[in-house]
Length: 339
Image (tube, rainbow, N blue to C red; front, side, top):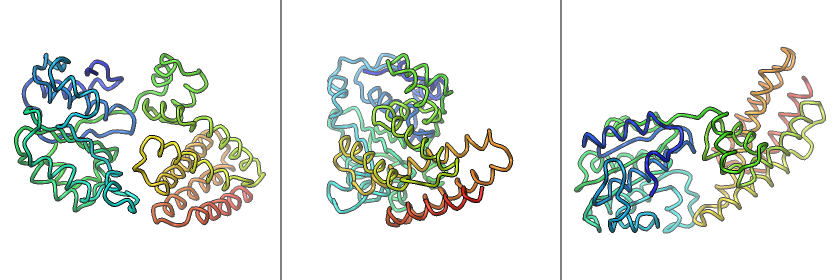
């Protein structure tokens, strides 16, 4: 089983957790806050295994008890990983844009009220906890404050301030940090990734090892090279060309990869998330160019960023993707033509 020593680059967060565990002061509720892909989920899994172990050895699970033997399979009856797409098991027509009470009630509140199957306690890990609706958050306040028996509830989020104050006050905050790009690049190279992929993955992920790995493995790094060519052409005054069609196809390819990983996901929702990802990478491109351009060109790059912000708002408002991309292309052409 993975131990805390195996978690990359989060020494301060791990030290906080290990100290609380060693002093027998681990709270019922924890908020793991930090960028996506920097080790929050891995740390939660590691802590969950330790919490459920029958004979822990200091801050490591023993690896031999009944709990430890079943834990690595992902089928431990007392470990519950909660994510928004679970709603589609019962209500397949929903797009799972947020984490609703329809997920929290059956996957947290109900199992939390029952005795643990293996008599050590229960662990609940909530992914993207900041996407919980107000009703979902309010429904779990009593469980957070007075859980039934020995329980651990861990909320994973990159936006802790989006959680209700009543949730935050009942949990201990553990902060996870972005990693230096050079450190991510070195770790990727150590894991066998090609040098160029490692460099581009580290830069695009902005210090997230997990995201860098997924960007390379799922083809985002390779696709971004093609995106960059189109943005270079736009900057050179060649117009948007096939950028709208390219973005739509790239978003569809991203969605297909996500559906391979999780068949409960909504294709439409994953397509929108893919489009949001490539818009974010476009914004990164414009921000980097801002740092190296002459004053006369700054207005164009700022206008490009504004156009992307508008498009992101349309995605959140569930506007048709074709219309979003048409509006984006028109605005980008206008901005860069003037420049």
